[in-house]
Each structure stands twice: as C-alpha cells, then as structure tokens.
Length: 262
Image (cartoon, rainbow, N blue to C red; front, side):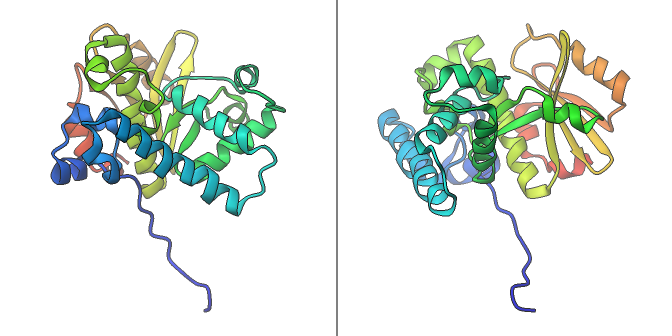
C-alpha cells in the first residue's frame, strides 16, 4: 500500500476565522480577504500590499509554479494573473486579454496559464452554466480570485474610498462572495459557474452531482435580479436566493455551511 493517502483539502481562512482571530468586520473581510499573515497590516496599506505581492503572489508564481512546471513565458504568466485578478468578478474573453498582454501568443497558452493559476489557488476562470458540456468549454470566462486580497492589491482605492464608491464596492462585494464560494468549492468538491442569457444573468451557479443552486449577489437596490427568476423557470434549481440587499445577510451567508445547500 505504499503511496496510498487521503487528500484533506484546506483553503483560505473564512470570515468566521478572521473575525474570531483578528476582529475583522464583514466589510474588512470582503476588502482585505482571508490571509492571516496580512491581517495585522491592514492599517498600513503599503505594507499590506507589499506582503500580498511578495509573500503570496511572487512566491507562488516565481517559486511554486515555476519550480514544478516548465513555463515558456514566465512574464506572460504573471501578466495573465495580474489582469485576471484586476478583473475578478467580471467576464473577460481570452481574445480581449491577448490584445492587452505583451508577447501573448495564443488563447491556448493563456487558457493553460489560467489553469495553472487555478491549481495554485490564486485565480480561476468560471465557465457559463449549460447542460451542454461543449457550450461550457466555449464560453467567455468570468475571472475569480480565490482570495479578495489578490484583487485589491491592484486597486487604486483605499478601504475608506471603496466603501464610499457604490459602483466600485459592488464589484468588490461580488468578487468577495465569489472568492468565498470558489474556496468552499475546493474543500467540498462542487463546481461553480455563472449564467447569462442576453440581458439576464445570475452571478453564481453551484453544482454538485445532480443538484444545482443559484446565487445572485446584490450590494444595492439598483441591481436587477430578473435573471434569477428566469433561471428558476429554465433549470428548476434545488435552491435560489439573493445574498445582500433584499436577501440573506452577508454575515449570515459567509458563516453558513455551503455544503448543506445541496
């Protein structure tokens, strides 16, 4: 039985853990993420950003990935991560990325790099939910960091500025919820998608075996949630709900056992 083992998955720290250990509020968790090593640095934005950049991003990309995997264009791998992290919570086609990156090669190269970043727990590209597997593969990816600190390190806004900017906070809010979901997906082994059909969309679709759950993230009253009703009619999910304004409180959602939704 040499080499037999059980894989026990551990992910980024949850809101409950960051609250209990460091006194984080919900807004602080959504902005600064769940890295315990950086938690004591949030009052000094320069040191916080330096820690995330050096101890997390550079260490993972320049050491962990490059030591284990032959990469023909290391600089392109870093650029792919930076662009994807900045766009976390948004759809961005690989063809559009090609136009923004230097020496980008082709979409296959970028897709391979995104897959490496996903396996490293940094960044993933969510696929559009569809019953047809080929449609999923061909969909435009929705980029999502595994920890919102990885997005915010590329933001020009401070925590105080972001809270006051409703539009910017809406993107941060959605990315923060997404980071929690993909981290939970890593532990509990379910899949995360998004759904979009013309003007209707749902932020996150969770699937485990035959069960699907639809989640719409709403940070203010202005956001349209018609897509959730349309998705219910088309796919009849086991559960569907709003997180945020008019739905489940964010603190309650970030504290629940996601696995019980299935």
